[in-house]
Image 1 (cartoon, helix red, strand yellow):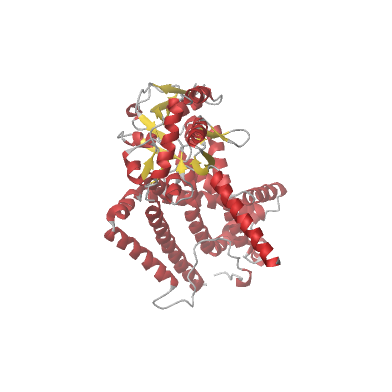
Image 2 (image 1 turned 90 degrees about the horizontal axis):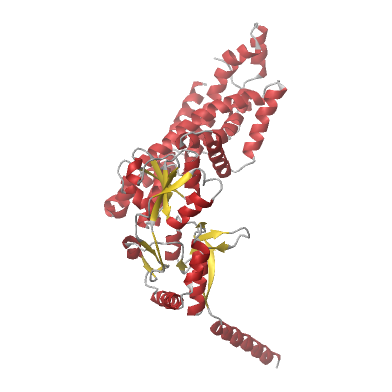
Length: 246
Length: 262
């Protein structure tokens, strides 16, 4: 009798947890390098915030899943999705041919471009004008690849773009290349830097950000695309853009 | 030749690569297996799978040069700081002694990685120093404290009687230190300094976080664009291993020579 009761109890628990698992929306673990304001960053309460975060939460709401964000260093963020440490990456990742060979992307969700930031006294207007100088960018970014294209300009790669700006403030490098929204934060909004730096010209690349998933994970790509389409259709991203990118 | 008291010989302060053990002779020593194995693996991989292995090897040589620049620059500067600190630690001058001891205590209590970050960015706020030199200074300030202990132990390993004898001959304390104690102490500290050199060579990989384009940084750059993380770090680890084993052998031979001389 006792045995039977226990069996019944175990069965009940099993059924209940299984039921809960089916009922609860799917949880997706997403990596982000939260050192790239205003797209993704850590706020005063140690929470990961930014455009990408709000945008993906909106996508998740439309497509019926929940998101758990994981702050991950950029250098190696792709290796983690390949190793299955998380399901996806949303971290201002530009869709490039090289990356498409190795990973799958959602549809583009926002456009971006690289831009050059220099000390106030600099007269050069583009990377090629900075011959003989060092130009900084975050390691493995499209910005770093753009600097490399210029012969005579030495690329210096940083783990975080913030360290590149600090090195420029210390006079160790002559320019920094990064995405325009991030450039605006560092060169125009930060008190320590706005008297020292300036943004030159307009963004010189046309890029689009996508959400990265492991190669072959079509199910997740479809789910993300469904959500992105719904968000765009409802124009739910307009308010998010307004909040973070103005 | 002055007599060196072996019983007081100094403790092994460094954490360099293992120095070959004397009894470990013969064809298949651990050192040989590791050294030949590392070179063989690297050669095999670059021949068997040139993409990406050979490409990685072609990408990193200037990084190896920077790694050496940082290591050699830092060990020289750290030796100077270390000698001054070592003298301070045994000095009877309270101020000199206190300052040296404080320096050692502070440095030993802070993780190397934190120190490097701190010194590099703190220097940047004060003076304009190029990145490579800043990295060398950061490493040297960290290692100067450890080198200070090596020199202190080295000087203390010379019997006290020698100082007394030199002073009874009419030398001042400073003269005795310069002409009698230090020349002997230098011989004693050579092997541990060699150990520190190897430890520093390995720790120099930490400057890659300062965006100094050393061996590790070059590897990370290659990996971050080709996404060949496993392959790249395999090559980087093997190159470090080959360099470190080479120098540990060299230091082992040097140590044997010095021992034989005595």
